[in-house]
Length: 365
Image 1 (tube, rainbow, N blue to C red):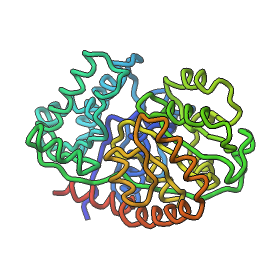
Image 2 (image 1 turned 45 degrees about the horizontal axis):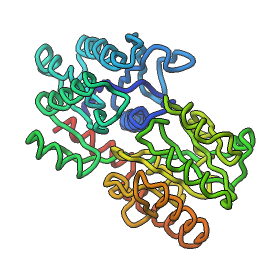
Image 3 (image 1 turned 180 degrees about the vertical axis):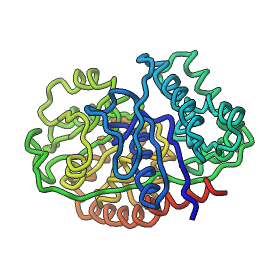
């Protein structure tokens, strides 16, 4: 059996501290390493509190970058691409459309290296980017379609878009859900949370995640006696804290990882995601895998993930969210049944062992 040497480029780093791309890479790399492949993940310098060179069988290489919002990803990806070409890896796997601006480099200078790209989301839809950055991200999307040997997308909607927009055939391989249940330590008490007496939202805290609508819905409903745990970090947190206005029901926990994150899922009453746009949310898939009742915005990516196993509300609509929240909290048995079916769906469709095997077959194609 030939062992492949695979380099992952485009993520901030692993073990993931925040963000869906990092968690995707973390799980995919870990499962590929379990299958005996040699996996290299490029971390940004300073991403981890301590620099480690190996994690669960995955090699970690730490490289510098220009610490600027518009330049961080591309400068780190450039150095990682140079290093991966020098190491003569078998596969360079780019994650995200921004890093795919560089996909031409290995195609030109190291043609024996197979170039794979995964489209995680249409990043140019994020208002944090200025006009020039959005233009470059769209150029990255074109570069991905032109230079990658194979393009992986997370959803059927993404596949249809790239086929219609760029004439590019793609392989659909979804995100997955991986959980390690370990609740020996009580991570909730420091935040004043009690089991089954809070709902949880897990994401990067950016405007597109729609957490502002969830906060507004809760503030408009003083009769709802349940806490909201907002798990994650991001540039929008300060604005959301102002919006929450010290409401004692709204708790910002910051980033949570591994055991502590698992406990937030395990002990919650319900998972709520109010996103305006998603690729295929790992947080939602993990909530489903925990058997947690899910209430989510009815955007196409969420509906593709949850099917008929979630309660849906209209995105960017505080009243719709509030109405469904009140309904969910007063129909506990119905929600528990949705959670049970969601777990069955996650176990069947979003299994990292299957996902990593399908990805490996794309490498070997």
